[in-house]
Length: 113
Image (cartoon, rainbow, N blue to C red; front, side, top):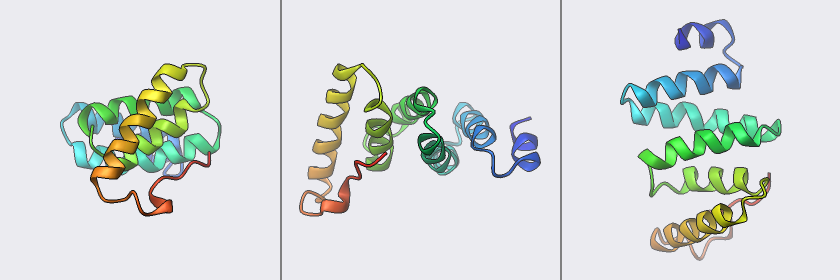
């Protein structure tokens, strides 16, 4: 069903999110990541922060050390009143970035929404 939704509306981030979730549940994690990250970016641009938080949380369970996943989560949680979660994510992202050797690169984290 998710693949049919994407074929019917290939530019729909909602359809991409549905497919990505199905891929996650099906254990196809890398494909899910490649589907959900762009969908999450599009949803962020549209202001659908709750949906992006849900996607980012699901991805973070599978990819806890992924800088792009953590960056998406931080940008989604910035728009919420849950400052405790945001601070925890920022700390995690900073730690991952430092360990990945990205601490010297200002482009390692994008903070725009």
